[in-house]
Length: 454
Image 1 (cartoon, one colour):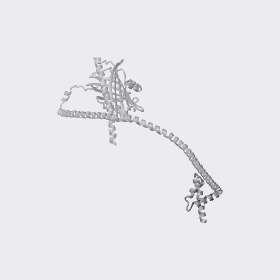
Image 2 (tube, helix red, strand yellow):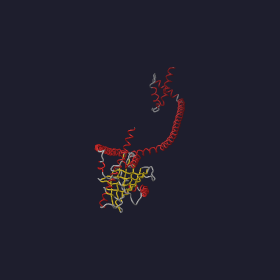
Image 3 (cartoon, helix red, strand yellow):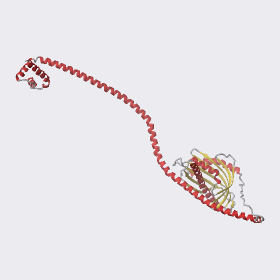
Image 4 (cartoon, helix red, strand yellow):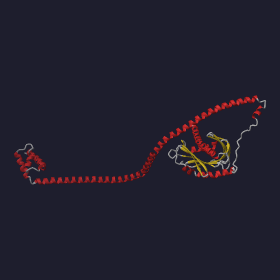
Protein backbone atom coordinates (compact mmCIF):
# COMPACT_ATOMS: atom_id res chain seq x y z
CA UNK A 1 0.00 0.00 0.00
CA UNK A 2 2.87 2.32 0.77
CA UNK A 3 4.30 1.64 -2.65
CA UNK A 4 1.03 2.59 -4.14
CA UNK A 5 1.09 5.92 -2.30
CA UNK A 6 4.54 6.55 -3.56
CA UNK A 7 3.34 5.95 -7.10
CA UNK A 8 0.46 8.24 -6.51
CA UNK A 9 2.78 10.92 -5.09
CA UNK A 10 4.95 10.60 -8.17
CA UNK A 11 1.94 10.91 -10.41
CA UNK A 12 0.75 13.90 -8.42
CA UNK A 13 4.07 15.58 -8.70
CA UNK A 14 4.17 14.93 -12.45
CA UNK A 15 0.67 16.34 -12.76
CA UNK A 16 1.74 19.53 -10.98
CA UNK A 17 4.73 19.86 -13.24
CA UNK A 18 2.67 19.69 -16.39
CA UNK A 19 -0.24 21.82 -15.24
CA UNK A 20 1.09 24.98 -16.72
CA UNK A 21 2.06 23.17 -19.93
CA UNK A 22 -1.44 21.91 -20.56
CA UNK A 23 -3.46 24.93 -19.47
CA UNK A 24 -5.05 25.00 -22.93
CA UNK A 25 -6.64 21.58 -22.47
CA UNK A 26 -10.50 21.36 -22.38
CA UNK A 27 -10.97 20.45 -18.63
CA UNK A 28 -8.81 19.74 -15.64
CA UNK A 29 -9.80 16.12 -15.86
CA UNK A 30 -8.77 15.82 -19.43
CA UNK A 31 -5.53 17.51 -18.61
CA UNK A 32 -4.91 15.23 -15.66
CA UNK A 33 -5.78 12.20 -17.78
CA UNK A 34 -3.39 13.31 -20.38
CA UNK A 35 -0.73 13.74 -17.70
CA UNK A 36 -1.34 10.36 -16.13
CA UNK A 37 -1.48 8.38 -19.34
CA UNK A 38 2.21 7.85 -19.57
CA UNK A 39 2.71 6.86 -15.92
CA UNK A 40 3.52 3.19 -15.35
CA UNK A 41 1.19 0.87 -13.40
CA UNK A 42 -1.82 3.08 -13.56
CA UNK A 43 -5.35 1.80 -14.14
CA UNK A 44 -8.74 3.47 -14.54
CA UNK A 45 -9.49 2.78 -10.86
CA UNK A 46 -6.25 4.32 -9.83
CA UNK A 47 -6.88 7.23 -12.12
CA UNK A 48 -10.30 7.80 -10.54
CA UNK A 49 -8.84 7.60 -7.10
CA UNK A 50 -6.15 10.04 -8.09
CA UNK A 51 -8.74 12.40 -9.43
CA UNK A 52 -10.67 12.08 -6.19
CA UNK A 53 -7.58 12.95 -4.20
CA UNK A 54 -6.92 15.85 -6.48
CA UNK A 55 -10.44 17.03 -5.82
CA UNK A 56 -10.00 16.42 -2.08
CA UNK A 57 -6.82 18.38 -2.05
CA UNK A 58 -8.23 21.11 -4.29
CA UNK A 59 -8.19 23.50 -1.40
CA UNK A 60 -4.51 22.98 -0.78
CA UNK A 61 -3.42 23.28 -4.41
CA UNK A 62 -4.00 26.97 -4.76
CA UNK A 63 -1.83 27.61 -1.73
CA UNK A 64 1.02 25.63 -3.20
CA UNK A 65 0.46 27.31 -6.53
CA UNK A 66 0.64 30.69 -4.87
CA UNK A 67 3.90 29.72 -3.28
CA UNK A 68 5.24 28.72 -6.70
CA UNK A 69 3.95 31.91 -8.15
CA UNK A 70 5.64 33.86 -5.40
CA UNK A 71 8.84 32.07 -6.14
CA UNK A 72 8.37 32.77 -9.82
CA UNK A 73 7.67 36.42 -9.10
CA UNK A 74 10.76 36.61 -6.92
CA UNK A 75 12.82 34.91 -9.58
CA UNK A 76 11.35 37.14 -12.29
CA UNK A 77 12.03 40.21 -10.19
CA UNK A 78 15.60 39.09 -9.63
CA UNK A 79 16.02 38.43 -13.34
CA UNK A 80 14.48 41.81 -14.11
CA UNK A 81 16.84 43.50 -11.66
CA UNK A 82 19.76 41.62 -13.18
CA UNK A 83 18.71 42.61 -16.66
CA UNK A 84 18.24 46.19 -15.56
CA UNK A 85 21.67 46.31 -13.97
CA UNK A 86 23.17 44.72 -17.10
CA UNK A 87 21.48 47.32 -19.28
CA UNK A 88 22.81 50.06 -17.01
CA UNK A 89 26.33 48.70 -17.25
CA UNK A 90 26.07 48.56 -21.06
CA UNK A 91 24.64 52.08 -21.12
CA UNK A 92 27.45 53.33 -18.91
CA UNK A 93 30.02 51.62 -21.09
CA UNK A 94 28.51 53.16 -24.22
CA UNK A 95 28.44 56.58 -22.52
CA UNK A 96 32.12 56.26 -21.61
CA UNK A 97 32.97 55.16 -25.14
CA UNK A 98 31.01 58.12 -26.55
CA UNK A 99 32.83 60.57 -24.29
CA UNK A 100 36.18 59.02 -25.29
CA UNK A 101 35.32 59.24 -28.98
CA UNK A 102 34.28 62.89 -28.60
CA UNK A 103 37.60 63.70 -26.93
CA UNK A 104 39.43 61.73 -29.62
CA UNK A 105 37.61 63.59 -32.41
CA UNK A 106 38.48 66.97 -30.89
CA UNK A 107 42.14 65.94 -30.55
CA UNK A 108 42.28 64.62 -34.10
CA UNK A 109 40.68 67.82 -35.44
CA UNK A 110 43.40 69.87 -33.76
CA UNK A 111 46.08 67.63 -35.28
CA UNK A 112 44.41 67.92 -38.69
CA UNK A 113 44.43 71.72 -38.53
CA UNK A 114 48.09 71.71 -37.53
CA UNK A 115 48.96 69.38 -40.43
CA UNK A 116 46.99 71.53 -42.86
CA UNK A 117 48.85 74.64 -41.73
CA UNK A 118 52.20 72.94 -42.24
CA UNK A 119 51.35 71.17 -45.48
CA UNK A 120 49.65 74.06 -47.34
CA UNK A 121 52.97 75.96 -47.88
CA UNK A 122 54.66 72.71 -48.86
CA UNK A 123 51.88 71.86 -51.31
CA UNK A 124 51.97 75.42 -52.68
CA UNK A 125 55.74 75.23 -53.07
CA UNK A 126 55.40 71.83 -54.70
CA UNK A 127 52.82 73.17 -57.16
CA UNK A 128 55.03 76.16 -57.92
CA UNK A 129 58.03 73.87 -58.39
CA UNK A 130 55.96 71.61 -60.65
CA UNK A 131 54.76 74.64 -62.62
CA UNK A 132 58.30 76.00 -62.83
CA UNK A 133 59.55 72.61 -63.93
CA UNK A 134 56.81 72.45 -66.56
CA UNK A 135 57.80 75.91 -67.76
CA UNK A 136 61.51 75.15 -67.72
CA UNK A 137 61.15 71.80 -69.48
CA UNK A 138 60.28 73.32 -72.89
CA UNK A 139 63.01 75.93 -72.37
CA UNK A 140 65.53 73.19 -71.54
CA UNK A 141 64.39 71.23 -74.57
CA UNK A 142 64.76 74.36 -76.69
CA UNK A 143 68.21 75.01 -75.21
CA UNK A 144 69.15 71.40 -75.87
CA UNK A 145 68.10 71.89 -79.49
CA UNK A 146 69.94 75.22 -79.82
CA UNK A 147 73.22 74.19 -78.20
CA UNK A 148 74.31 71.72 -80.93
CA UNK A 149 73.57 74.33 -83.60
CA UNK A 150 75.72 76.93 -81.85
CA UNK A 151 78.58 74.50 -81.32
CA UNK A 152 78.26 73.29 -84.91
CA UNK A 153 78.52 76.84 -86.20
CA UNK A 154 81.51 77.50 -83.97
CA UNK A 155 83.18 74.25 -85.11
CA UNK A 156 82.68 75.22 -88.75
CA UNK A 157 84.30 78.59 -88.05
CA UNK A 158 87.24 76.93 -86.34
CA UNK A 159 87.62 74.45 -89.21
CA UNK A 160 87.50 77.29 -91.70
CA UNK A 161 90.10 79.21 -89.72
CA UNK A 162 92.33 76.15 -89.55
CA UNK A 163 92.10 75.48 -93.27
CA UNK A 164 92.75 79.14 -93.96
CA UNK A 165 95.78 79.11 -91.67
CA UNK A 166 97.11 76.00 -93.35
CA UNK A 167 96.74 77.61 -96.78
CA UNK A 168 98.46 80.75 -95.55
CA UNK A 169 101.23 78.68 -94.02
CA UNK A 170 101.78 76.88 -97.30
CA UNK A 171 101.83 80.16 -99.18
CA UNK A 172 104.21 81.69 -96.67
CA UNK A 173 106.41 78.65 -96.90
CA UNK A 174 106.59 79.01 -100.68
CA UNK A 175 107.31 82.73 -100.37
CA UNK A 176 109.93 82.07 -97.72
CA UNK A 177 111.67 79.51 -99.89
CA UNK A 178 111.71 82.01 -102.75
CA UNK A 179 113.07 84.72 -100.48
CA UNK A 180 115.77 82.38 -99.24
CA UNK A 181 116.80 81.65 -102.81
CA UNK A 182 116.89 85.37 -103.64
CA UNK A 183 118.89 86.09 -100.48
CA UNK A 184 121.41 83.43 -101.36
CA UNK A 185 121.72 84.79 -104.89
CA UNK A 186 122.22 88.32 -103.58
CA UNK A 187 124.77 87.06 -101.11
CA UNK A 188 126.76 85.45 -103.90
CA UNK A 189 126.45 88.60 -106.00
CA UNK A 190 127.66 90.83 -103.19
CA UNK A 191 130.57 88.55 -102.44
CA UNK A 192 131.63 88.60 -106.11
CA UNK A 193 131.62 92.38 -106.26
CA UNK A 194 132.92 93.09 -102.80
CA UNK A 195 136.17 94.53 -104.08
CA UNK A 196 134.54 96.99 -106.47
CA UNK A 197 132.27 99.97 -106.16
CA UNK A 198 129.86 98.72 -108.76
CA UNK A 199 127.18 98.29 -106.14
CA UNK A 200 127.18 102.04 -105.53
CA UNK A 201 126.73 102.85 -109.18
CA UNK A 202 123.95 100.30 -109.40
CA UNK A 203 122.15 101.88 -106.50
CA UNK A 204 122.70 105.39 -107.85
CA UNK A 205 120.79 108.17 -106.15
CA UNK A 206 117.64 106.12 -105.57
CA UNK A 207 115.61 107.55 -102.69
CA UNK A 208 114.40 105.40 -99.83
CA UNK A 209 110.61 105.32 -99.42
CA UNK A 210 109.30 106.75 -96.20
CA UNK A 211 105.77 107.29 -94.94
CA UNK A 212 105.03 110.94 -94.36
CA UNK A 213 101.96 111.86 -92.32
CA UNK A 214 100.44 115.28 -92.46
CA UNK A 215 98.97 116.38 -89.18
CA UNK A 216 95.70 118.22 -89.07
CA UNK A 217 96.61 121.90 -89.31
CA UNK A 218 93.66 123.38 -87.45
CA UNK A 219 93.30 120.99 -84.53
CA UNK A 220 95.81 119.72 -81.98
CA UNK A 221 95.93 116.20 -80.62
CA UNK A 222 95.06 117.42 -77.13
CA UNK A 223 91.85 119.09 -78.25
CA UNK A 224 90.81 116.01 -80.23
CA UNK A 225 91.38 113.70 -77.25
CA UNK A 226 89.52 116.08 -74.93
CA UNK A 227 86.55 116.03 -77.27
CA UNK A 228 86.62 112.24 -77.49
CA UNK A 229 86.89 111.92 -73.71
CA UNK A 230 83.94 114.26 -73.17
CA UNK A 231 81.79 112.20 -75.53
CA UNK A 232 82.64 108.68 -74.33
CA UNK A 233 80.34 108.71 -71.28
CA UNK A 234 77.59 110.40 -73.26
CA UNK A 235 77.86 107.64 -75.86
CA UNK A 236 77.53 105.02 -73.12
CA UNK A 237 74.27 106.58 -71.93
CA UNK A 238 72.91 106.31 -75.49
CA UNK A 239 73.64 102.60 -75.97
CA UNK A 240 70.09 101.40 -75.19
CA UNK A 241 68.52 104.01 -77.46
CA UNK A 242 70.93 103.19 -80.30
CA UNK A 243 70.28 99.45 -80.03
CA UNK A 244 66.53 100.04 -79.87
CA UNK A 245 66.56 102.27 -82.97
CA UNK A 246 68.48 99.63 -84.91
CA UNK A 247 66.45 96.65 -83.60
CA UNK A 248 69.40 95.07 -81.83
CA UNK A 249 67.53 94.88 -78.51
CA UNK A 250 65.13 92.27 -79.93
CA UNK A 251 67.43 90.26 -82.22
CA UNK A 252 69.03 87.33 -80.43
CA UNK A 253 70.48 85.29 -83.29
CA UNK A 254 73.64 85.54 -85.37
CA UNK A 255 73.36 88.06 -88.23
CA UNK A 256 75.13 91.03 -89.83
CA UNK A 257 73.89 94.03 -91.81
CA UNK A 258 74.99 97.47 -93.03
CA UNK A 259 73.13 100.64 -93.95
CA UNK A 260 74.15 103.92 -95.55
CA UNK A 261 72.09 107.08 -95.86
CA UNK A 262 72.67 110.77 -96.39
CA UNK A 263 72.08 113.32 -93.67
CA UNK A 264 72.19 117.08 -93.57
CA UNK A 265 75.89 117.14 -92.76
CA UNK A 266 77.15 114.16 -94.74
CA UNK A 267 76.88 110.44 -95.37
CA UNK A 268 76.15 108.20 -92.40
CA UNK A 269 77.02 104.52 -92.23
CA UNK A 270 75.68 101.91 -89.81
CA UNK A 271 77.25 98.48 -89.50
CA UNK A 272 75.91 96.05 -86.93
CA UNK A 273 76.21 92.34 -86.25
CA UNK A 274 75.30 89.74 -83.62
CA UNK A 275 76.83 86.40 -82.76
CA UNK A 276 75.76 83.70 -80.26
CA UNK A 277 78.63 82.08 -78.38
CA UNK A 278 78.43 78.99 -76.11
CA UNK A 279 80.16 80.76 -73.20
CA UNK A 280 78.91 82.79 -70.26
CA UNK A 281 78.70 86.58 -70.25
CA UNK A 282 81.66 87.18 -67.92
CA UNK A 283 84.08 85.05 -69.97
CA UNK A 284 82.91 86.56 -73.25
CA UNK A 285 83.20 90.11 -71.87
CA UNK A 286 86.75 89.42 -70.68
CA UNK A 287 87.71 87.99 -74.08
CA UNK A 288 86.21 91.03 -75.84
CA UNK A 289 88.27 93.40 -73.69
CA UNK A 290 91.41 91.37 -74.38
CA UNK A 291 90.67 91.76 -78.09
CA UNK A 292 90.50 95.55 -77.80
CA UNK A 293 93.71 95.70 -75.81
CA UNK A 294 95.67 93.91 -78.55
CA UNK A 295 93.32 94.00 -81.54
CA UNK A 296 95.39 96.13 -83.91
CA UNK A 297 98.45 93.95 -83.48
CA UNK A 298 96.85 90.93 -85.20
CA UNK A 299 94.01 92.39 -87.24
CA UNK A 300 93.63 90.90 -90.72
CA UNK A 301 93.74 93.37 -93.65
CA UNK A 302 95.45 95.93 -91.40
CA UNK A 303 99.05 96.89 -90.82
CA UNK A 304 99.91 98.89 -87.72
CA UNK A 305 103.03 100.94 -88.18
CA UNK A 306 102.74 103.41 -85.31
CA UNK A 307 101.09 103.27 -81.92
CA UNK A 308 101.27 105.78 -79.12
CA UNK A 309 99.45 105.09 -75.87
CA UNK A 310 98.34 108.32 -74.26
CA UNK A 311 98.61 108.85 -70.53
CA UNK A 312 95.61 111.09 -69.93
CA UNK A 313 93.36 109.41 -67.35
CA UNK A 314 94.27 105.92 -68.50
CA UNK A 315 92.71 103.28 -66.21
CA UNK A 316 92.16 99.54 -66.11
CA UNK A 317 88.93 99.95 -68.11
CA UNK A 318 90.08 102.74 -70.47
CA UNK A 319 92.42 102.69 -73.49
CA UNK A 320 93.61 105.99 -75.01
CA UNK A 321 95.78 105.60 -78.10
CA UNK A 322 96.96 107.24 -81.29
CA UNK A 323 98.25 105.14 -84.19
CA UNK A 324 98.86 105.01 -87.90
CA UNK A 325 97.23 102.24 -89.89
CA UNK A 326 97.35 100.81 -93.37
CA UNK A 327 94.11 99.19 -94.50
CA UNK A 328 93.59 96.90 -97.49
CA UNK A 329 90.09 96.27 -98.84
CA UNK A 330 88.55 95.63 -102.28
CA UNK A 331 91.99 95.65 -103.88
CA UNK A 332 92.68 99.18 -102.63
CA UNK A 333 95.04 100.52 -99.99
CA UNK A 334 94.48 103.47 -97.65
CA UNK A 335 96.58 105.03 -94.91
CA UNK A 336 94.95 106.49 -91.82
CA UNK A 337 95.89 108.31 -88.67
CA UNK A 338 93.60 107.35 -85.83
CA UNK A 339 92.99 108.82 -82.39
CA UNK A 340 90.79 106.62 -80.24
CA UNK A 341 89.42 106.17 -76.73
CA UNK A 342 87.94 102.83 -75.66
CA UNK A 343 86.18 102.32 -72.33
CA UNK A 344 84.62 99.28 -70.70
CA UNK A 345 81.51 99.37 -68.48
CA UNK A 346 80.74 96.24 -66.43
CA UNK A 347 77.10 96.00 -65.40
CA UNK A 348 75.30 93.35 -63.40
CA UNK A 349 73.87 91.46 -66.37
CA UNK A 350 76.00 92.64 -69.29
CA UNK A 351 79.34 94.12 -70.38
CA UNK A 352 79.35 97.26 -72.55
CA UNK A 353 82.43 98.49 -74.45
CA UNK A 354 82.17 101.94 -76.05
CA UNK A 355 84.72 103.68 -78.24
CA UNK A 356 84.99 106.99 -80.05
CA UNK A 357 87.52 107.51 -82.81
CA UNK A 358 88.79 110.37 -84.93
CA UNK A 359 90.01 108.96 -88.28
CA UNK A 360 92.09 111.10 -90.61
CA UNK A 361 92.75 109.51 -94.05
CA UNK A 362 96.29 110.36 -95.27
CA UNK A 363 96.14 108.67 -98.67
CA UNK A 364 93.70 106.62 -100.68
CA UNK A 365 94.59 104.50 -103.71
CA UNK A 366 98.00 106.15 -103.85
CA UNK A 367 96.61 109.71 -103.82
CA UNK A 368 96.96 112.08 -100.87
CA UNK A 369 93.77 113.00 -99.08
CA UNK A 370 93.01 116.02 -96.91
CA UNK A 371 89.89 117.20 -95.15
CA UNK A 372 88.12 113.82 -95.15
CA UNK A 373 88.07 113.10 -91.42
CA UNK A 374 85.69 110.47 -90.11
CA UNK A 375 83.98 110.41 -86.74
CA UNK A 376 83.39 106.88 -85.51
CA UNK A 377 81.27 105.83 -82.55
CA UNK A 378 81.08 102.15 -81.73
CA UNK A 379 79.39 99.82 -79.24
CA UNK A 380 80.04 96.21 -78.28
CA UNK A 381 77.54 94.66 -75.85
CA UNK A 382 77.81 91.21 -74.29
CA UNK A 383 74.63 89.97 -72.67
CA UNK A 384 72.70 86.78 -72.10
CA UNK A 385 70.04 85.85 -74.68
CA UNK A 386 66.67 85.99 -72.97
CA UNK A 387 65.47 82.74 -74.57
CA UNK A 388 68.60 80.73 -73.73
CA UNK A 389 70.42 79.49 -70.65
CA UNK A 390 73.19 81.39 -68.80
CA UNK A 391 75.74 79.14 -70.55
CA UNK A 392 75.31 81.24 -73.70
CA UNK A 393 76.27 84.83 -74.50
CA UNK A 394 75.09 87.20 -77.23
CA UNK A 395 77.84 89.36 -78.74
CA UNK A 396 76.45 92.48 -80.47
CA UNK A 397 78.47 95.17 -82.28
CA UNK A 398 77.33 98.47 -83.77
CA UNK A 399 79.40 101.04 -85.72
CA UNK A 400 78.15 104.55 -86.46
CA UNK A 401 80.42 106.39 -88.95
CA UNK A 402 79.91 109.85 -90.38
CA UNK A 403 82.58 111.25 -92.75
CA UNK A 404 83.26 114.97 -92.80
CA UNK A 405 82.96 116.12 -96.42
CA UNK A 406 84.08 117.50 -98.87
CA UNK A 407 87.38 116.00 -99.92
CA UNK A 408 89.22 119.01 -101.25
CA UNK A 409 92.49 117.59 -102.61
CA UNK A 410 91.11 115.21 -105.27
CA UNK A 411 90.21 116.22 -108.79
CA UNK A 412 86.96 114.23 -109.15
CA UNK A 413 85.45 114.91 -105.76
CA UNK A 414 82.14 113.05 -106.14
CA UNK A 415 83.65 109.88 -107.63
CA UNK A 416 86.40 109.63 -105.03
CA UNK A 417 83.97 110.41 -102.23
CA UNK A 418 81.83 107.43 -103.26
CA UNK A 419 84.86 105.18 -103.63
CA UNK A 420 86.21 106.19 -100.23
CA UNK A 421 82.81 105.69 -98.60
CA UNK A 422 82.47 102.21 -100.13
CA UNK A 423 86.01 101.45 -99.04
CA UNK A 424 85.30 102.44 -95.43
CA UNK A 425 82.02 100.52 -95.43
CA UNK A 426 83.56 97.28 -96.75
CA UNK A 427 86.60 97.66 -94.47
CA UNK A 428 84.42 98.15 -91.39
CA UNK A 429 82.27 95.12 -92.26
CA UNK A 430 85.43 93.02 -92.52
CA UNK A 431 86.59 94.50 -89.23
CA UNK A 432 83.36 93.51 -87.44
CA UNK A 433 83.52 89.94 -88.76
CA UNK A 434 87.19 89.69 -87.81
CA UNK A 435 86.44 91.10 -84.34
CA UNK A 436 83.80 88.47 -83.61
CA UNK A 437 86.00 85.69 -84.98
CA UNK A 438 89.00 86.72 -82.90
CA UNK A 439 86.88 86.88 -79.73
CA UNK A 440 85.59 83.40 -80.53
CA UNK A 441 89.17 82.19 -81.04
CA UNK A 442 90.22 83.62 -77.68
CA UNK A 443 87.36 81.83 -75.91
CA UNK A 444 88.02 78.60 -77.77
CA UNK A 445 91.73 78.63 -76.94
CA UNK A 446 91.01 79.34 -73.27
CA UNK A 447 88.50 76.47 -73.14
CA UNK A 448 90.96 74.07 -74.77
CA UNK A 449 93.71 75.16 -72.39
CA UNK A 450 91.44 74.64 -69.37
CA UNK A 451 90.39 71.22 -70.67
CA UNK A 452 94.00 70.12 -71.20
CA UNK A 453 94.95 71.18 -67.66
CA UNK A 454 92.35 68.89 -66.09
